[in-house]
Structures are given as structure tokens and as C-alpha cells.
Length: 173
Image (cartoon, rainbow, N blue to C red):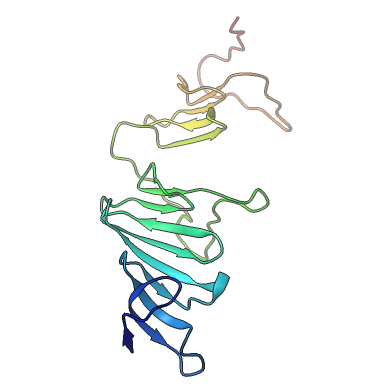
């Protein structure tokens, strides 16, 4: 263990391996950033963000990859999380998120005790699908007024069965 050794980045504290005393395995720089395994692009970096009071995790190749803020927000590939958990894709060839499991319960449970929608799916900011707090499902509408509200054409392959008193097909022009 050495302190105040002169490397290309001034460090206050570092631990180097027995194999190469000039390559720190762990060090704390003068800004308070902790770096582990600092060998080029494989470096793992932990940094206490004095501005937000959070913790940043990154690597030597692409910089920051995750952020844990003191306000409880977590960002993955997001330097400014917009929600409690904000995950953003940086590759257009893989899904942003994947949920799978072996369970006798639902794979995903969404419980909203507030007044906002339960689920909204959008593309480039345009609403495509919504499940409201009332349980109404809307496709191509942000405020469905029926259990299923589709704006636009729909195709049904198979049987379409109507139950209840009135069986009306109407046009909204």
C-alpha cells in the first residue's frame, strides 16, 4: 500500500499488484473517485457524486453505466434518471429489458395505488397502448372510455362473440 504516489492521474491512495507495482489494482484519486482493476477498458469505477450524493458505476471503455442517486432514483445508461428506475438502451440490437422466470405467480406485477395509468407503452413519445387505473385498455388512444377502446382499424382472426343486452356495431365519425 502506498499513498501519494505520482501516476498520470494523481492519487491519494492505491493498492498495486505484486506483478506490476506501477499499475494500481485499486486507487482513490484526488476527486474521491474509487477505481478498481484499472487496466484499460476493463476498469470498474465507483464514484461518489458530491452533487447528488449518489454513487456512479462505470468502466474504462464507455464511462458511466449506472447511477444510484440519494433521492432513490436508479439510472442504467442514464446520467439523469427521470423515474425511480430509468433504463435506457444504447444498442439498437437488443431489448432494453427482459423479464423471465419460473414461477407459479405472475411474472410481472404492477400495482399502482395512485391515480396515474397502470401501464403505458409509447414509441418516440407517442402513446400506443394504455391500461388505465379503471382497468380500461386503449390502443392508439390515451383515454379509453370502454373496457377495450381501439382507435383505428382492427382485425379479428377467429370468432368474435358479443355478450350482454345490446349488440351494436357503430361508427364513430
